[in-house]
Amino acid sequence: MKIRRLAGLALGCLLAITAQAHDEKTAAPPQMSAEQKAMMEAWQKAATPTEKHKQLISEFEGTWDARMTMWMDPSAPPSVETGKSVNTAVLDGRQLRMDYSGQFMGQPYEGVGYTGYNNVTGKYFSTWSDNMSTGLFVAEGDYDPASKSYGYRAQMPDPMKPGTMVPVREAMRFVDKDHAVFEMYETRDGKELKTMQIEYTRAK
Image (cartoon, rainbow, N blue to C red; front, side, top):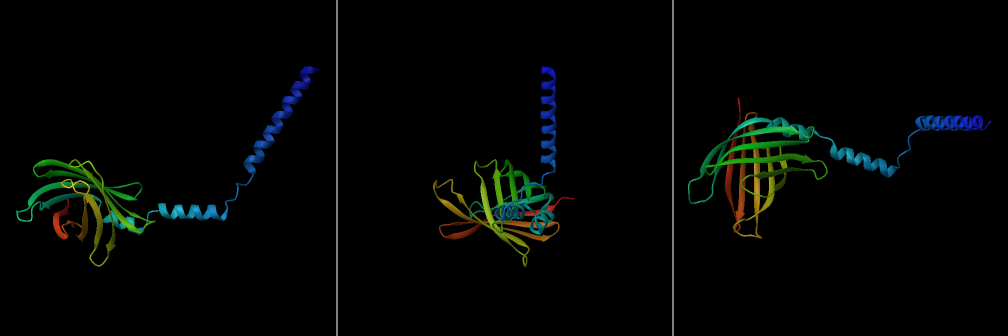
């Protein structure tokens, strides 16, 4: 008799659990509040690649031969080096990664940079790090359709004057689908000077 009661109790519990699981599966998901919906929409808009991302990647993705000119001393001739840049779309088309290798002042040189567009700030950004420094360079800017160029501004610490920041201006101009020119300017003692130029030619 006791065994029958226990069996009946177990069967009743099993049926109750099965019914509850069925109810949970068929129950409608909880409705989001207006605030939650607005938050989800904002995050989706911030995370979705746009035509700006597609343009940036289509212009500069691929392998490029590079000719780098550096003006270390305005009174002396510039140094000229060659290199290669392999640019790859990453993060599902949200950013473009640049892997650069070549020579710098006769020494092996390699660097890694990321370029993208921030939907939230409405600005393009560019980062750079290499084996000639221990820092991360970050610049922000805009695109000018008339000149087909991206303009960036940033500040970098001066290794010769610790605690001093040097204003930097960069320009990346696309001449055509196979040629681009990068220029870098630094402002020291209130005077802006061109310190670097890289001429890119798409590798065949």
